Amino acid sequence: MAATTRIPKAELTGLRGALVRRVSRKMLGDVPDPVEVAWHNRKVVNFSLAVGRKAQAWDQCDENLKSFAHMAAAALVGCSFCLDLGYFMAHNEGLDVAKAREVPRWRESTVFTPLERDVLEYAEAMSRTPTTVTDELSARLLAQLGPAAVVELTAYVALANMYARSNTALGIEGQGFAASCDLAPLAEPAPA
Image (cartoon, rainbow, N blue to C red; front, side, top):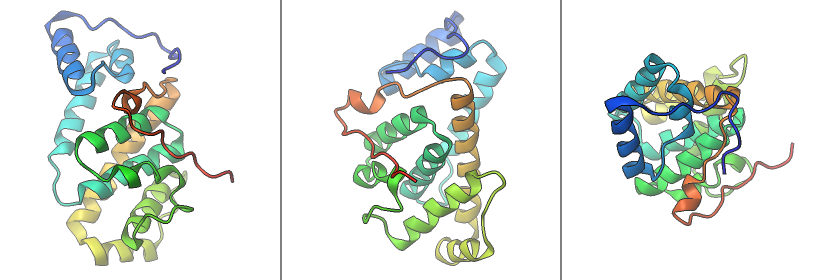
């Protein structure tokens, strides 16, 4: 379960707080720690929730690919919360959870297609500082997905980095969402 965060959680107050609590508990079974920590600055919470809702409407890139990319970025950055929630969401959205659980060790895993491997490599390359995306990798993705999907995938990975880096900086860890629906734990990255 989640450890103590670097900034204490705030009480979700007012009508908006009650609504966020109710919706979170209905969708996830609990209020996510990042929401409670960010509640200290409502403009940040509102932005984060709004951007997340808008990104859910994007439809030019396959949902499995976006889910794998998000989890690859989270694994590289070290966001256990993002991996926990990502696996839970993949399960609830009917995505390929057998593959999702292998994302942290995708290089050693045999379950991914060449396209999925390119997507995972792209997510990691975007998540490094400085980025290490190559012309060759971009060209492969463009040929396989088309420009609209590559733009969407890129924006999705950028958002994943925003969430993952915010969560790790704030000391937010996995909250047990995946365990709450009896999902097997995520694979651990292979030692370097």
